[in-house]
Amino acid sequence: MLLPTINNSLNELKDLLHQLANSEYSSPCVSLSNSTIGEHTRHVIEMFQCLIVNYDSGIVNYDKRERNHQIQTDTVFALHQISVIQNSLDRENKKMQLQQIVDGEELRIETNYFRELLYNLEHCIHHQALIKVAVIHNGRVILNEDFGVARSTIEYRQQCAQ
Image (cartoon, rainbow, N blue to C red):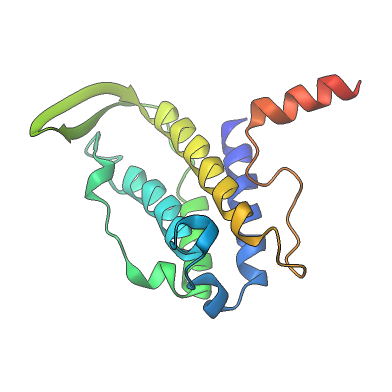
């Protein structure tokens, strides 16, 4: 169930990117504290990439992601990166370690691949919610009504509607 949900969120992001010119994608947005839709998209993409690249080593450190400027300025390139991610996610669950430096101290926390996929899904949805704020007033951009909405909220709304 996790992979179809992740793919759905990533497909929603792809649908948005198909609707944006590179200039819209890479222009600062006041509603995003002058960051860009592209920067938020790059962040989502690189978090997934970081997990995939570090799957074999079993140690993931999201602070050591690539920060590829082309992802945040070129929608075609970003779309390709999302497709590569989608084709790379289906892996066996395994133990992993989450590594981070906090106040100069290295922390390593036990985790697993599926837990990190779930984290990346929630992280993706969070950034989609921010992106939605940036595009909501653009009359020509069409978003799925659940774009940027947590699965638990969607399920709660469905229960209330019954």
